[in-house]
Structures are given as C-alpha cells and as structure tokens.
Length: 56
Image (cartoon, rainbow, N blue to C red; front, side):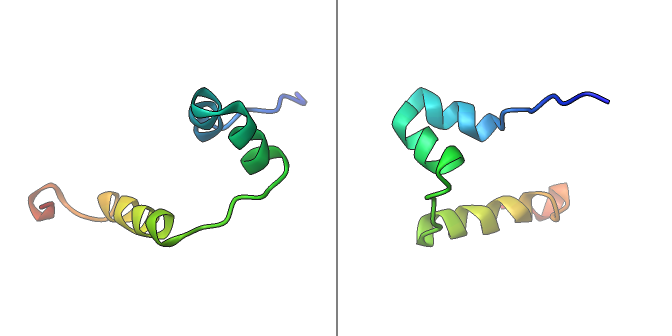
C-alpha cells in the first residue's frame, strides 16, 4: 500500500498567489468561509446538477 499524500489543486493555486496564505489555509487550518466563498460553492454545485439547456 502506498503512503502517497496528494496536494489539492486548490492548494497549488493558493501557493501561487501567496505561499503564506497557502500555509495558513492548508497547514494551519485557519480558513473560514465568508459570504463570497459560500456563494461560490453554491454556484459551483449547481454546475453539476443542471442540464445543458437549463444553464443561464
């Protein structure tokens, strides 16, 4: 069995933006949702549930 640990793509994106921010979010676990991240999560989840003709 492999003990490989994978890095989330989101972590790579955050690291490219700011390595310290990446550390705080993914290592220290200090990320908290706000109105914008919650809205983005809700909008993103709709992408997987709507049919092609239903998308605006």
